[in-house]
Image (cartoon, rainbow, N blue to C red; front, side):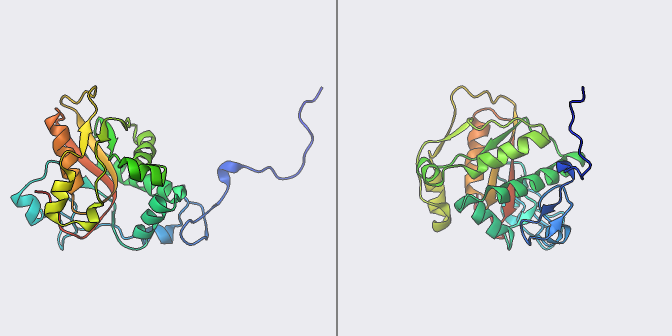
Length: 246
């Protein structure tokens, strides 16, 4: 007895299904839903500070801030400058819950990080998303840093420890404050989960954008004081604004 139906038509093979580019709508055969022209035109971060990834006019340099007052974190890795269309994609991901855009950027970030690992970058023991304030988490419904860390975890084979850090205070948005107010704003704003084991571990903070670096500095210092050996920062984009890490 034959169990399979007779069918002579074409068979739909989902693995070979063509995708549409999320930026221009054109059909693409690439693994991610972005066509090659759109991917090549993204604002890829070029010459940058070897520590904080601040855009610089030449390669192999360290910015004045990092040279005179080295930050607590070891290195920032970001594939893009915070410019069009990446800035728009991040905004739509965060504030309009356009998760496919965030997933696309997360996959491209994973590819960029894997390239750095292949070139000799030390692989961290865990990915640690930057915690979101409780009020903002209720309003938004998700933490974009947590989603990014989860999307990076599987392709990079690095565990995501999303409960290692917690936000203890709701604070005003950093963008509206000057450097002194940012430092005061972040004081006592975060804590390490009491049961966390950090002794001599290499950790990587995950966030969407690095602007002044104040949040990354506060969290890196907190993790190092709790016993971590090294802290890196992985993010989607770096703004051209100089760091204010003191």
